[in-house]
Image (cartoon, rainbow, N blue to C red; front, side, top):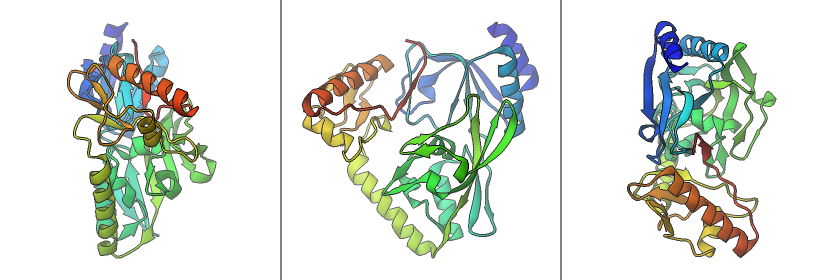
Length: 300
């Protein structure tokens, strides 16, 4: 089956196609077994052609952005991993609006908006990864969340391209509901006009806060657990006595206890075992059930 699929991909997809690609190369945790195929479509039309092939062949697939907030198990992914890295449109529109491709890095977006005098997404400067990934999990910091600034998102699925206004979206804290087979390829944002110097000051403040509190020094996926309502996950983990706890090469950061870091040679199984230990200890200590913010896929 893989050889037949490979032939179709090579014949009909214009983007890059990698076979048996280790996902450790594409995730910020630096763990994960091989994907059968890792495909980076050349543009939205190429993405549509790829999804049509996958639908026709019944091939499982997974869309990824910058590889943050993602853990692929050691057995890898049976199917096609789709990268949005070439969805890089970035353009100012009239009315303090901007259209942004899913593959644009968050840092690049905040720099662009600063230069254009457009405010409202400064908090993204400290969140690694891409706009597509940030939208898919409704990333936020400092009281802001990315979907609060969305006018509409552009997705593609088996029915083709679709624009969805924010009022039609089902979203919340670190959550956006997408339909089965649907991928975000971009979004239009509505922002505020402001002096670039004031925007720069806020960006510098966000960066300074992240450097002081979250510069953990080792590969990580960002916050591993969601904050329970009215509580901070890092404090629950700290109070359970798990600062510095380690399973194999995976460790609870000694800088920020909601960051699990790869101290070298870690496996996905190490992170999963450490996460299970944390959840058990926090539940026992506080009665609170932690839920992973990191998305977990793949085979054992």
